[in-house]
Structures are given as structure tokens and as C-alpha cells.
Length: 365
Image (cartoon, rainbow, N blue to C red):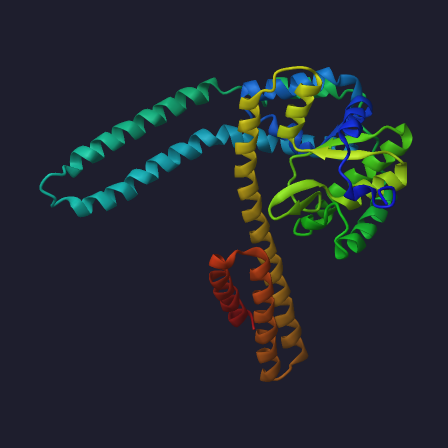
């Protein structure tokens, strides 16, 4: 039964041990880009591990492309953080002052004294941020991380696909996404062909595995369910369809890790002390990034749904139907709201989501 349903079985300890001995290590673009977000100690830990597996590293062309396209954006976001925090520290005292002024008539609380201490502390933090900003490395002019990554993956990047091959993948992707076949179906909210990025890199991994006949360990910081099998909020392992597809196509074993688990198991395999501080930092950054991605996903999904409602309205106007059709539009739209809000929100936000969505329906219809 295990040979038929290969993807639903966790490797045994012996199989894991063999996997680490034989596998090529393939990294997603988010793993390489997150190196810019980590502290120097954590970044060096990850790059040191890369170097110790240097003869077994490989990345698909799609990963290399996304790394180069997004690198400057990631660098820019780190550089702008100083001014973003200073702006927050400038605006916050105004709100605090407004709240504290309601206690001006208190007999024992000196509001002016409290405000002075708050402003002095905030000003000191802003001065410290200015000092830190001056020490921030100019990665635009000299990017040592890029130099190290380039050296590590020199000659270890897969070939590009010709345009006709990419078109085939996009067509296949549309059908796969409709059936929720992983990976990539949760990227449908992305614009244009960007929604097929994960599928392109997946096919490039499979093609590489066919050529080398070596098992693959894929390291990604993507936590979506089009990569991972989850149960009651816990990650069980790679989506079984992925394990089955690469085994059927290339006859190789496949497993996946997120960066913190990769560091843990890699250092254990190398006989090194596990850097728990680095693992803790990676988890903290991933939690913040996951929250940001969820918000971005919801915003993008709401935008697409609004566009669909507007297109329905245009069709109604063009067909010059009677008022009854507009009522039907509102009914259909509100049914969509009910389904979308149940999918996207927990119980405590469904009411607000439905109210906002139904207001949009009223306006659009």
C-alpha cells in the first residue's frame, strides 16, 4: 500500500538518514531573500550551512529569477525601516497627549511632566535610530550577501524554459488550480503570469530530478497549503500530491523543510551544536511575514471580487434588463459575500466582512 500511496507516508528514520546522505538541496527564493532580513549571526549560520553542502546545492531558474527581481525591494524595505519607525514615534505622542489631556484636572497627576518624559524618551530613540541608520550597510553599492550567494550557486542554476514551454505550463496551471492540484493554486490572486511562478519552479525541479535521478530536499519559507499538508493548524509534511508526482515522474524521493527545521536537522547531521537563537529569530520573522501575507491576500481577493461584481453590473446595464435583475444581482452578490467571508475570516470578523461586502454590493448593483 505504501508504494501506491507514497506521499501519505512519513519517511522512516532510516529513510530520512539516507535522504540526507543522497539528496540535492534545492532552495526557494524566499529562503535566499530572507537572509537579508535576518541578523548577521543568523544569516552567517545559514550561509555556513550552505557552504558545507556546496557540492549538493541547486536552484531552479525561476528561483534565481525571483531572487534577482525582488532583492532590491527587500533591501529597500530594510533601509526604510528607520524612517518608518521615526514617523511612528512622531505621530504616537500626539495621540498620547490627546488621551493624557483628559487627566489635566487630576490633583496628583502632572500631565505636563509625563508628556515631557515621553517626548524625551521618544526623541532619544529617534536619535539612536539615526545612529543605527548611518551604520546600515549600503547593499546597493556593495552587497556581500549577494556575492556569497552568487559564489555558492555558481554553476548550480537550472536552465530556462522556452516561451512555448512556459505557455504550456500556464495552460496546465489553469486546469490544475481549478482542481486545487499543488503547488501554486493559492497564488491565483497574483497578477498575470506571476500566479504560475511556483508551478514553473516545481516543473523545473521535476525535470532536474529526472536528469540527475537524485532525491530532492526542498527548503522553502512558503507556508501555504498548496505546499504543505496541514491538520488542525499543524503542519504534517509536504502535500502528498507533490511527493507522488515527483516520484511518479522522476522516480526519486522528495521531502521539504522550512528554514528553521532545515538549520536544525542540517546542524545535527553535520554534528554541530544547533543554533537555537537563529531558529527563534527565523520563527519570529516568519510569523510577522505570515500576518503581512494574509492581509495582502485578503486585500487582493477582495479587489478581484469587487472587479467581478462590477463586471456583472456592466453586463446588466448593457443588457438593459429590468429592476428585477438588479435585485437578483444583489442577492447573488450577498451570497458570494457570505461564502467569501466564511472562507477568509474567523467568527469574530465575519459580520464586519459581510457588512462591508454587502455595502459594496448595494453600491455596485
